[in-house]
Length: 339
Ligand code: NAD
Ligand code: DAU
Image (tube, rainbow, N blue to C red):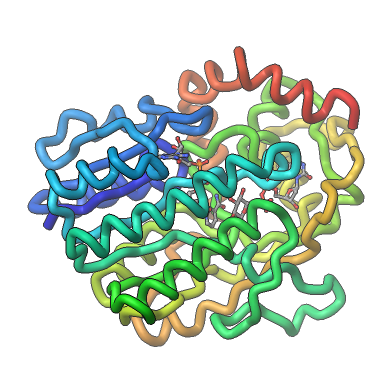
């Protein structure tokens, strides 16, 4: 089978490419990525010379380019990770989120329809459901929870999901969607909470916690997410949405304190800064459908996964050190300088 993975130079896409190239030597994996600020070919070093792997640089929203690529490559499966993925950036510049996340997705859907792709999988997020109150631990997002987005990012992802489902109903395109909770693990770009806090704590720099740090995220190790997507593209029912999450809820403050403790750094590094506008309070996934229908079970708990991840950042300083200099240093200064 020939499998197109878009956004494979990013965090989750990169981990997924590793998984697929190593797990299925008989399949051809084509990684299409625009190499935006979040794309990093260093992530693909461990697989770049494997015979079943190929990288193509390009934009999922570039229609002529995508149509040519699909005509030439005759993909069996498309897995779309490519996206603008950072909520804070969507608050300062929403336009590119519409361009990539909505128009990029519809371009891939058109090409998949035109060239007879056998499965189109959309990698979506629990953020499409909005948030849950902090004082109702009994509530969880199920696949039937109405879409109720808060940020430009989540609105663009929800729009994309609706187009994916429309292409199933209207054109019969064989689609699936996964909606996962917050991922963490190797190759995570250090603008996101966990790698940001690890890299800054190691440098004894202040750790910016938004608001009072009481917001809750439901953390899943990236390799458990990759296993879930692999199962869904092979065994999931077309037209269906599958929630992915491992019941690992933590407040942001708990996460930051866990990292500080593991690195033997003082809590005095924590600096409470002004809150994210529209900040979602709590995410919590009910993964029952994925567990009962497809037999998925996460391998990591948060406690085992965070230790593995911290160790990875300690062992792979070269990977993240050059990211946090240059252009990203300017972004960080603009984002936090006046908070
Ligand atoms: P990321 O920002 O690390 O990677 C995104 C990748 O997409 C980058 O390599 C980037 O270069 C590429 N890209 C961006 N625009 C492109 C375009 N127009 N054409 C081709 N490539 C383009 O993101 P991530 O955290 O790995 O997230 C991957 C996907 O998973 C996204 O769709 C995101 O919405 C979804 N998701 C993320 C999480 C999470 O916790 N990170 C959780 C659930 C779902
Ligand atoms: O839930 C899935 C989503 O998780 C994905 O769809 C997104 O692509 C991904 O970026 C992530 O979104 P979040 O906004 O939850 O992740 P982020 O790492 O940006 O923030 C996690 C929490 O930590 C959130 O409550 C905001 C807070 N935070 C974040 C940063 C970067 C801080 O307190 N300080 C920070 O510096």
